[in-house]
Image (cartoon, rainbow, N blue to C red):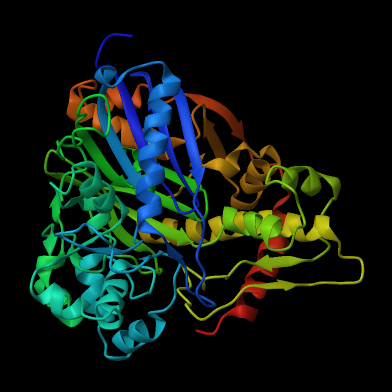
Length: 497
């Protein structure tokens, strides 16, 4: 391989930290991964150890380079993609976090968000940020940290602290504390960023009593974010791209045309539609967000967020011990013709789009004496498909145009049974790419654009490769019957009617 032609992606997710080295054609050369322990201080609370995230991210980056057989001089640039909304505040002088990271799934700020809604703040926040008021987003998490960590608010007022989502935290560490920045996609998930002006909003910051000195500089998703500090790798490597995980997957799936839709199945499930230069305000409880910003040009998207997808399978494995490994779920689902009327509503962290019910909790409904492990496992998989249909219906209504094709990615899409059931439930063709780890691939592409490996998005799109398609084959009557029963199951767990 020619020198400076490979790309390193650091993909820091909710349940693992991963690094992948790609060649210029988007083919993975080496992968390293470490599982990230989850911290649950109380029901509904989810935290991560920021120092563990940094140590593991550096370790997998080094391991991936070593396994690729390349040396650092052959890596043109690093791209970073990250679990979005997860919030870290650290001391600018020491680099030490003031508290564990508060994870996007965490619901501790539900009461604060309820007060904001009751005070009539939703229209203002939605107009400027494209978001609904929910504990999901970073803004209320920042406020909680400032109010609940001893001395934090005073230190923030003196300019001694820095906030970041995980991309900013890793960038700070990779540059030895030299760069405090984020990109427009991550900024757009804070509930503090005006997506139209592309700037932090003073009024929204004041609403949550967050000093703007705490916030990172907002940059394009592709650009020079700095170089890695001496000693981390054999030589300093340029950091050329940053995007939140779902936006990175949109790039990795080459969804560059207006109306193109991708759905990522990881810990959660996230459906994103490219809406081009138009920021479409949702009438159906979806989010209007930044898909990517390149060369100062903003591309917007409609997004639907499902908090629990693969996490439900992880719960079946670790919480209930019903399966030994996630792939076992496919074999169990194939063993039976149906769940026998069993529905699992995985509202472990409330319900995301299009319901936005922070107080809802998970339930298994329709149990009978005949219900066994296979029915419960299959119900968990089916729930992913029903939730995707929830989002596609809302998205199609907002966009005013039909969605005929869905590009899918993430770890769960290797399950052929699940992909066929998905196509049946959403009644659309489902396309799976050759590289399903498109989140990391998108981060690599953004870095490659900055490094000059790709001349533009058209060249990136030319690398997308199809691996398999799944076409709907279920009778319409059966599809409607199953989905109506799902809607009834969701209604039973909702608290916000």
